Image (cartoon, rainbow, N blue to C red):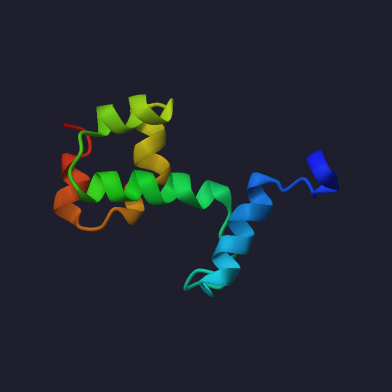
Length: 85
């Protein structure tokens, strides 16, 4: 790099940001990763009742994957019933 600065990766920057705000781990003691942002996006979108088809298209995956991996964390039974609509 110019002026011999260190190359900083996106992962390194993400971990530095989490360290600076004291939020390295979730309530289950698991360390946050960049992939955590994908999970956060999906669950937040489901909770805001964004149509699951729109979420799947935006994330480049199928409705079935959204339901399987993110639907269980999206909260209420009523919301889960709406996933397939």
